[in-house]
Image 1: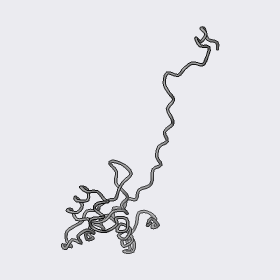
Image 2 (image 1 turned 135 degrees about the vertical axis):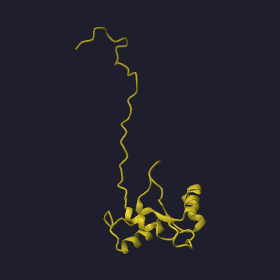
Image 3 (image 1 turned 180 degrees about the vertical axis):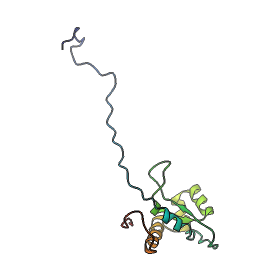
Length: 130
């Protein structure tokens, strides 16, 4: 196909918009969801204060997630009473762990191992511990 009018500069046609680089979507990681573990976890004692009232249910506090509006995996949750759960949300994980002297990852792994050792059924293969 031939042009009806020649190019002004005799060179190639300039693009009006720059080409955008292809964006590759981030790889989605499977997140463990285990409702039975969370039901068991709320019967445990708060890791910050070891709540003296054992009949007081704890909230499962999930660790950091991969984005806004999402939560971490269920096997990364630890039991916190409502008071300490609210405090954790206010000051964030690093300050909360430093204040009470524990590691969320180690506590979560210990609770999940106790749950698995408890003989409870697990939704996913049992090799998820770090």
